[in-house]
Image 1 (cartoon, helix red, strand yellow):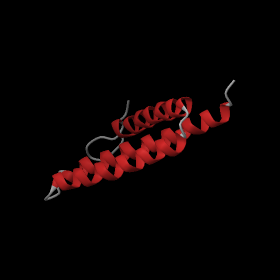
Image 2 (image 1 turned 90 degrees about the vertical axis):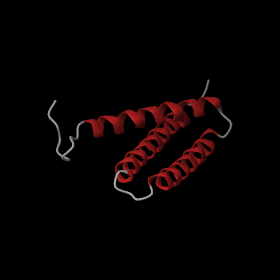
Image 3 (image 1 turned 30 degrees about the horizontal axis):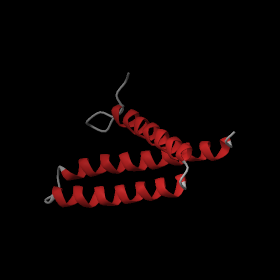
Image 4 (image 1 turned 60 degrees about the vertical axis):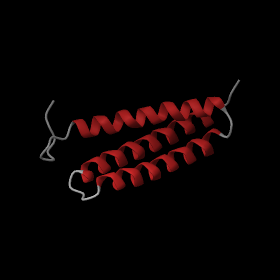
Length: 98
């Protein structure tokens, strides 16, 4: 039987990594609209976000498929949290009522 604590820690780490990844994407897209060179901003942002994400996945998994799976599930949960946060904010930056 596998120990549950490393899986919970992997899930939490993946959620944090996913939240950072997609928050970075959100900020990149919002800044690219007014940037003079949006392509270089996207390339740089993707490079940084992908490098950090792959590093986290590599450090967390340590060759264990269960920890990698838990981390990826957490990554998707982090994405859902960021989507939920930003879907509640309207264009003027004010919170939209449900």
